[in-house]
Image 1 (cartoon, rainbow, N blue to C red):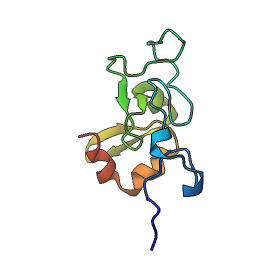
Image 2: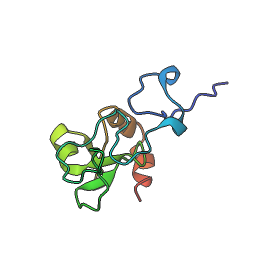
Image 3: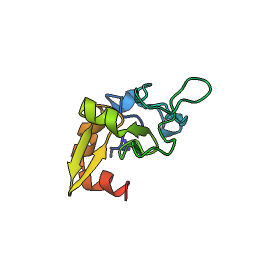
Image 4: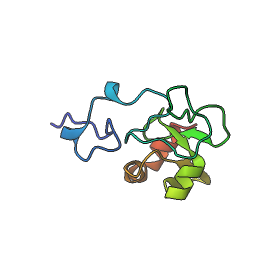
Length: 112
């Protein structure tokens, strides 16, 4: 019997043994699962971190790593998006693409 979850705690981890618990996922606005932010976003917090959820039409969250902010423009430029059922989904990092592809209906439902 396998007790490992098929959903990674971090999109940047390559194996279940390397994954941090979900509680350790970045919870700070402007931080990505890979320790990156969407460069080019105009909203910057006082400590210099970007706030990608500052009410911009360019902002969304990643359907795989729910809560991770994504700049649509930056994601488009980096190819970090997927089209599914007539809708576009923007991803926070390259690791989320294959995960989204494994079950697009599941991850699309997180954005409904």
